Image 1: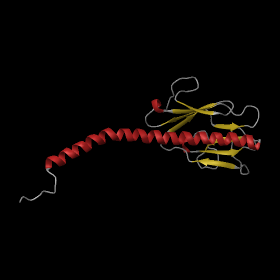
Image 2 (image 1 turned 180 degrees about the vertical axis):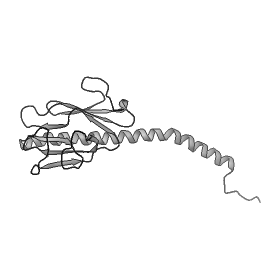
Image 3 (image 1 turned 120 degrees about the horizontal axis):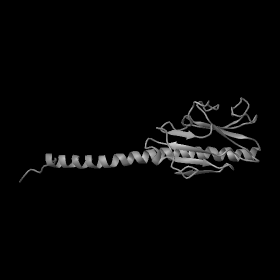
Image 4 (image 1 turned 30 degrees about the vertical axis):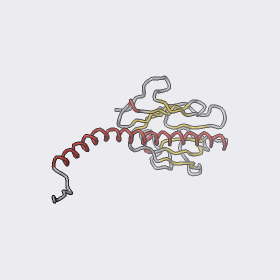
Length: 178
């Protein structure tokens, strides 16, 4: 009677490792693309949520509600700060322009931002009103390491309604900073 081998041969091991290496080189870029897309989608959805919150609170309270970039989650950041640091929604009782959250103005929500990408806006802040023109329209572009081809924009109409698009409001390709 012959002894039964319970191991693998060198040829079998080498073949298995080659198959694993091939699958890994094919799968890893796909997983990175999936990760970038899901992180971008989370950031875009968070920003759209902030717009809907500001818009509905302005109508509900009959006051100006502002969405602005924030580094500390408490106050509006200066021009040099980036949107990717985060943003806040607050009741802008004194209606200042540029908006700054005063100590007595209620903070409605603070958002963490998106440190993995770049967010570019043509406005420093968005103030929503209950009556008259709801907001100054604008475009906020979300860029990940893949560049302009994979960017998404949140386009805010003059009524304050956001929409997500792959092109800007003039139907031109989105541009990301280099």
